[in-house]
Image (cartoon, rainbow, N blue to C red):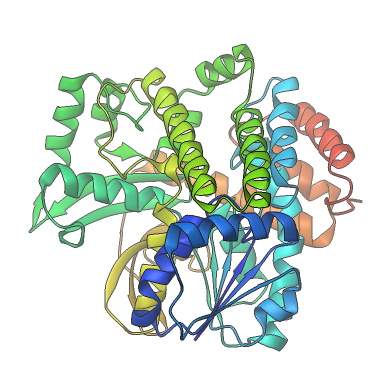
Length: 453
């Protein structure tokens, strides 16, 4: 069985590689293709990965390549984790909207639109190569914006595709930690779109513990990773995904961003650049232990910056060890748990981005939503969610309309649909500003943006 990872030169590779090595025998993994367009960075991250994960089993062949066809040939699973435009693209995606008085964020709003417009053409190219080289493969997408790209993969006709995100699983693990029970015993009644979801119930052995958690949050005055006032959570009667803070506190968030000296993307660009420079020097000196120490220091610094941001948003306690999304390891477990279940190794319920198929009342059957899914051998079974609060459904429908227009704009090269998509997004909602940011995106991202007419 072969797994291909596209975008393997990214900062998460050591964590994913370690998990793959650990599970290789259980998965029957005998070929791993690591592909990235930057061969030098791929070599650096693989060197750290090997120091982190130890020696691969003798039965596992690990290949690095810059050739997409070589990576895809014969793959059973293709994991996409690339960032088209790299971190420089993210910096522009955040700075351009801020210059026009709009939120600057990489996965939602105007920034998420720009990232999607650069990524959809590349994703479709990957799918076309898969038709010839691995026509039965599962496409497991972690590239952002994950939900929108899962929708784009389905629109391109690739039925064996699924979008993953580690945020819901982190919420599940946190709930299990607080209840002191195994993760598998906790069921999240979760619904929404990617980075736009809500936990309606937290079930353990038939009992709903969400009211207990809401009381704990109110007593503590907040919780890290949940940038919401306790009064708002009480009124909602649900726990939103942290990204909903951009919608619920739109004005406050924008003012905080405009007052900050750096965007999150600029901070990470500097952090990543420093890491890569140090890794290159250590690699040239043959200092593998030093590379691993430097990588762990990088993870700690990234984690600390995330905790500071959540504390500023109202958190008071510390996240339990291993549950910080900034550490970047969560998606490795999500991806490999999904693969194991699709291979028939176990039955598992996971929160995934899949077609609705009637799970949420009010959403179309083919619209990709983020919901609990029963994963069995070669099959995904969306679990019933039923009727949801009207305010949540309305927001989901509006954002889904934006997503579909964005996909059509990228595929058709339609200026009109691009403008309509931006104008409809709740975090923009202004045709004039939509035109301004679109003009800037087309200019700055000209090499990677679809040509719009």
